[in-house]
Figure (cartoon, rainbow, N blue to C red):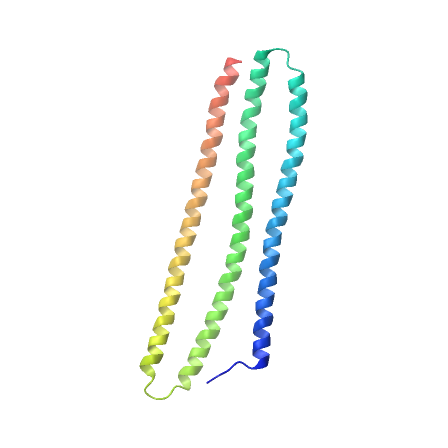
Amino acid sequence: MSYLTPEQFAAANKANLETLFGLTNKAFEGVEKLVELNLQVAKAALGEAADNAKAIMAVKDAQELLALQAAMLQPSAEKAAAYSRHLYDIAASTSAEVTKSAEAQFADVQKKFMGAIDGAVKNAPAGSESAVALVKSAITAANNAYESVHKAAKQAADMAEANFTAVTDTAVKATKASSKPARRAA
């Protein structure tokens, strides 16, 4: 039977630590992108608030105020939709990078495990072929189950993205449609 040497154990721990730090860095990169987006949105919102306040101060009658409100409504909805889209993109890209790293780690562990199984098979006593076949069959079934779950999760994520896009587009179109009558009334 093959056991890990201290060098192999240390190398495995080093690889696991590097993976952990890599994943932590990916998470921080996502947080940095989120902070950067929020700072840009806050800066833009502050500038727009100042512009809107100046425009409201220049209003001379109620009709002009209604027209100004209608004109402000549509860009706000579009910006909210764009912000939501950026948030989703940041989350999706961070998740994809973490998933990619996890899949690579899983493939490496799987390869090493299969190597250990193959090593054990070579040293297995005569007559244990059926037990070895059973273990290999269980590993194959587990791998197939993992692949099925992974494909289903990918399909669910793709469907969620399509639904998110459709809802965002519908909300923006509804805002555009509702602001047109308000402008006409003004």
